[in-house]
Structure formats: C-alpha cells, structure tokens
Length: 211
Image (cartoon, rainbow, N blue to C red; front, top):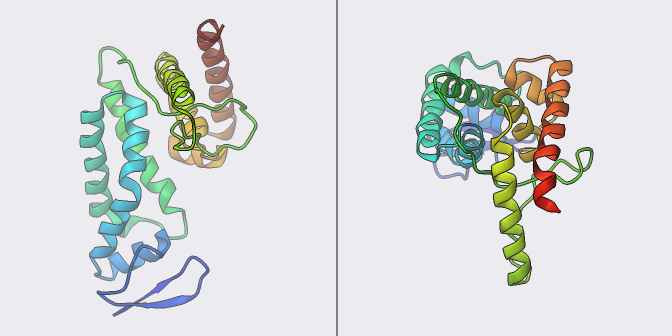
C-alpha cells in the first residue's frame, strides 16, 4: 500500500486496486518510484497521444514519431529517479520529446511536409488548442473546417524547424512562454522572437489561399 495525493492536495491511500487516473503527475511519479509499476502505465496513457501529436507535428512522419515517443518513455523509465520532483513533470517529458524531435530533424537531409491538426485565429487570445472536429456542426461546416485544417497543416510545415517548434508548442499545444523556454532550452526573449517570426511567416504564407 502507498500514499498518493489528489489534485487538491489531500492524501489518498493507494492500493493495487485503487484507480490511479485521478492522481496528479507528481503523485504518479512518487508511486512509481515507490515500486507501484502501474503508475508508469498511467503516465504513458496520459501523455502518449499528446506527445505523439507534438512529435508528429514537428517531424512530419507518423511512424517515426511513434518510434520517438516510444524512446521518450524508455528514457523516462530509465531516468525517472533523476527527475527533480520540485519541477513540472510535463515540462520534463516534453523536453525529452523536443530534444529527440530536434535530433531527428537535424539528421535529415530535407524537410518533409508536415500535417497539423489545428490553428489559432487570434495570437493573443485563449491559447487552448482548437478542435476542428465538432460533432454538433453541419456536414458542410465540417467539410470546410477539414479543408482549412489541411491548409494550415501544409502552411505550418513550411516554417523553419526552430520556428515551427515554438509555433506548435504555443499555438497548437497551448503551452505558456515559460514552458516553451524550459522545453526548448531557450530564453524568453528568443522564444518570443521566434514565435513572432513564425506567426508573421505563417500569415504571409496562408493569406493567398484564404482569398
């Protein structure tokens, strides 16, 4: 038996049968380090899809992205004992994914066409990732949104790799500037500069297709 924490900070006794899903990242890490291996399975379930989308959007190859995400979890498993639990686990795991994606792009001789899932219409608005699929929309609206998504995917793929990365993290994943700085290893000024250039380039490239 082990003790976990709810998101609200209240202690909870965790047994092999108790659900792990309600626990926050910090509690799952603690439980895993204490020997409850199912806690790692919950971490994988929580982050697998998000990391796959992030890496895929960055490198443009879904099969290779799956391999890299597998490598992310191998490294997390291998080095969990080194993780500073005073810091955010999400930042740590995204940093690992980001470094693997950057290495993948660095090793390529050409940039592939990357397809993306979403777009931000207002750079300074609510930075929750947009969802193109809405079951309440009419079929013709869904068709137009899917067409726009494909256009956005193509446009973002044209951005330089280091600009594309901050664009994906901010506009598609909704990360804060501080999180992006931690993930990419850049200072805030560099993050904002790259993001501003990425936004301007994105707007320039997509504008002719929206007329």
